[in-house]
Amino acid sequence: MAEVGRREEALHAVEEAVQIRHSRAASDPTAYEIDLASSLNNLSNRLGEVGRRVEALAAVEAAVEKYRSLAASDPAAYAADLASSLNNLSVALGEVGRRVEALAAVEAAVEIRRNMAAANPSAYEPDLAGSLNNLSVAMAEAGHQERALAAIEEAVEIRRNMAAANPSAYEPDLAGSLNSLSNRLAEAGRQEEALKAIDEAIEIRRRLASSNPPAHDLHLARALGNRGRLYVRSERWDDAIASYLESLEIGRTYGDRRGAGLVLNDLGLAYAGAGRWDDAIASYTESLEIVHAYGDRYGEALALNNLGLVSIDRGDPAGAIRRLGDALAIFEELGAPEAETVRSLLEPLTDRP
Image (cartoon, rainbow, N blue to C red; front, side, top):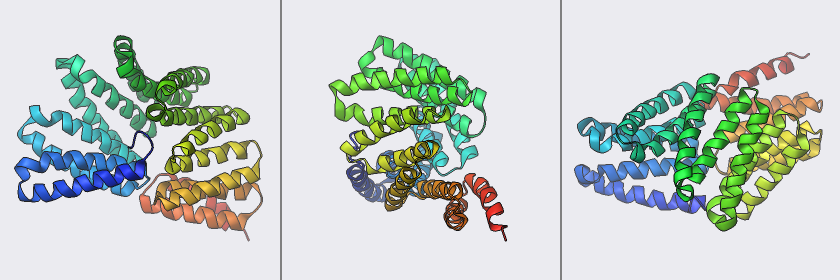
């Protein structure tokens, strides 16, 4: 259900699974604790997809605690599960801005998976590549750009080899890592290489989606969104708008309102860059409505921040103060590093006579 964009239904299904397994584990922990940990892991992923990031973090923290306990008594049996859960914990921590902790969690996952892959490459290299992918994201967010690029380059190399041997099984993973590689190259100022990587990812996604749209269309939409962000970096506003609009159309076809909320925020940035202020405000406002409806506090703060920036550009200091103030309150509530940037924007506005 999650893979074809039916995220609310996916969430309801795993919530029911967790409820059943909680009841069973309460009466017989030895028999059912591992199943409960697995469902909590999945619950975290589904909560994250609908923007309920704080709850997603709580769920995966509970899963990691259970897996740590199980792995302490039987490492051979549960190390792989612990690594998977640490991987997800890193993502959840990153989603609420706790970047140092996110990096520590995924480094622990990579260490476990590297040891397992050394002993059995065919069985565990796919998992290692997945954790390297997430390690790259966490390192980039923590400011370690060179190490972030090295991690994703290793992931791409592993996944290219796997896809060459078994395209149908591993091309989707390769496309995902190419997507991340594109982001890291862009952050390193290697714009043309970044576009080449994302174009290759989109080519793979389009081909896969042509034969199985429900399984691959939403992944194509995300890759198009990432290409839009690359175009924004080089101020190719019209190309960015076109890429975002295609991404948005695909997401809406599948009823992916949560994804639409994120793309609309990015689309607003492109409209603002092109000087299309009314379109920018409309995009940010719709994004704000969607992420608010999903309880995505971080996404809400981003949209408010961007509306505040538009207010500054349009000479509306009162509107900017109101919107940036609301964004600041949310970022501070989440302990997100963006709070400091917003505070620096507010100070000159509130100091005016």
